[in-house]
Amino acid sequence: MLDFERIKDYEQVMFCNDPASGLKAIIAIHNTTLGPALGGCRMRPYATVDEALEDALRLAKGMTYKCAAADVDFGGGKAVIIGDPLKDKNPDMFRAFGQFVNSLNGRFYTGTDMGTMPEDFVHSLKETNNIVGVPESYGGHGDSSIPTAQGVIYGIKAVLRRLWNDESLGDKSYAIQGLGKVGFKVAKTLLEEGATLYVTDINGSAIKDILSFSEKTKGTVHVLEGDLIYDAPADIFVPCALGAIINDATIERLSVKAVAGSANNQLLEDRHGDELRQKGILYAPDYIVNAGGLIQVADELKDPDKERVLQKTKAIYDTLNQIFDTAVKENMSTTQAANQFCEARMETRRRRNSFFTAKQPPKWQIRNNF
Image (cartoon, rainbow, N blue to C red; front, side, top):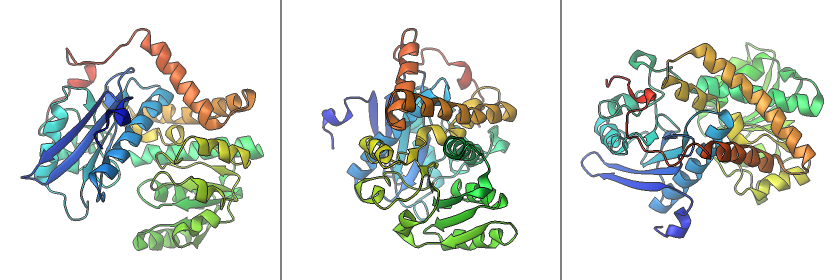
């Protein structure tokens, strides 16, 4: 687990332990070329510390590319808390977590992610200013899943334009994996447009809610159990749950024309992007499609402006079209094209930015403590 070869491309990995509150967490900072690291904090009952570390590392690297693609002045980082979010949370845990974040002296900003809620980080705010995605009553923009879902819709529209030269959402069918904070909002929008959905989620109440909502729309919902979602006869696969779901086993089962969803790190390995291309499936790189939430929390650290967030989220559509054009022109996968796009942006910035250290409080750090 502590093999330095495994983390050679990362600037810093921090293990956090507070026995009194039960906090066991890992903070991974991948790259701060563009600015201080920014990435959410998720909480899951990881089976092992090694599993938690792997998740933190993969997610932190993904955030570096997401920040570059979204053109926000932040680098990539991520935090994970080991524990069951339904049973193990307590205020002291998030206060302790805030102390560890604060010890990084402005190198890392974090907030809600899978398994955590904005309200959890109200407790962290008592220990550090380096928290984003907090409730509006505490100076934040509120629910970051709203712009994330909007970004997914823009991504789907870019795919529709590319494949069918028509952005009409209701004319196609979608296989949605996960009806959480983002997936449910995406599903609602598609149903309102009259789309056909194939859905799956481990949360029975979410399934019940989307079926109830569909009755008020022109759309249709078909419920599938577990991994049967990979066999759905849909036009577009919309992953909105865990990552690494595009792999050797699942690619063989997909009959869709495209993949565009909000889940992080959808490809188990980059080579799976090539395999999707070989199979004739258009892949919309996840860290571009799901950047809406990042755009909102990055904006929160300036002078929050919801209209500015909306306009920058709309740019996901244009960025994807640029990636699709490059992939065709250079005869490469969209994964390669997206990575190349982000790496070029980081290299340009590297000429005037070096390793980020907060010698003086940056403009986004002057917010009052709560």
